[in-house]
Image: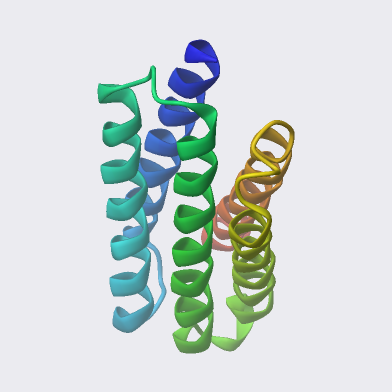
Length: 142
């Protein structure tokens, strides 16, 4: 359980850094603000997890649900202010991430044993796909 906690905290921190690094892209200023807030939230939450990795899996599930829900809402806001070219994947990312966070919170604490890894992994997968899309659109010749 401690290794899972440290691993998730490390991945969340890397995802936050990735969000912050995306700020150099061609998106609009409001989109960048929401993305910066999302990245800072990921980093702050990850530091909290890494400081005390012995916390129970139940509290980590609650934390992940809140984190995913807030990140999904920030992605939806970024998608609403993004250009036409990148809007659809950002909105899909925001919807799926928000729903995953909501599912964790609605079933908490009974889903703490299995849902954390599964749902959080899917949320990170969607964020990774969004990052790949951003990289591909930044370098169209690749």
